[in-house]
Length: 313
Image 1 (spheres, helix red, strand yellow):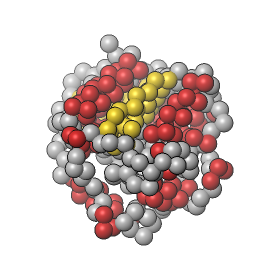
Image 2 (cartoon, one colour):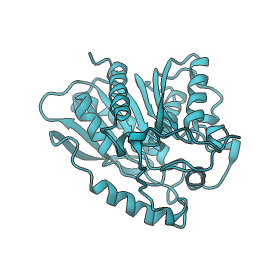
Image 3 (cartoon, helix red, strand yellow):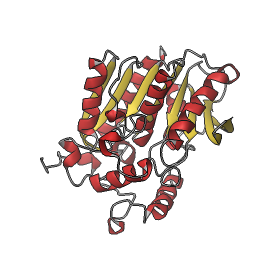
Image 4 (cartoon, helix red, strand yellow):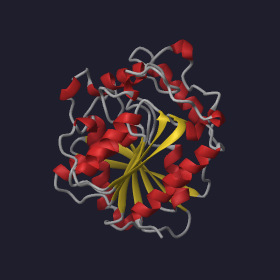
């Protein structure tokens, strides 16, 4: 396999690592420290949308209690909603999510961000159970939130994108009402990373070693090809009957080829999809350097596709 990383867009250099290189790859031994560093970095971000009202709700079902954060613009809102899953490799992050709030402001819709349980303390299927419970809660409470039941999309970034894809497949297999749209930002889909891009040793921000360790924590081991498709959607045999999907990824991303393969299989199975590969972009680069030309283009096109998927004129 190739060991060459594609050239990074000059405006995205130097790469700011959330995790110091002296810390080494993310693992079960340093996950607490990594979370603390991630939380500290998130706390320094400016409020992306001060006009957004944020309310925390408790979702309860037979599997327990979990939180969702509902973000809505002040005043009248469109009757559309996005069920949102934050990134963080299934092991970090929070439902109180900067990007979820930003999308609520830029799309002018309701965003319900799921504070799903994290591995290794809560391996799969905990996050999946939280996701499907949140989707059911959103449908049940749609009217009180000012949302049309047939105007609900689902999406996420990185691990959140993988979780969104797994929740959508489980929703299909439970014969429940389908979201109108999937919005997947460089989703974490393949526990094997058995692709050309997935075999490159080092990437900015999210390396192969870190990712495989995160998968091991999330899956409670390394089941390989026998991993549940609801945890690792690349393992799914059937991608038919899913809603229209938009997926984007940078070409300097460990997930590039697994994302491309997923979309090819999705469309081959008859589920409509559209994807974009952005040159010179590594994992999450558009938020580290939002003023770069490629970052502005990427975010503009992503939000445009989300509006189209929701049917917002």
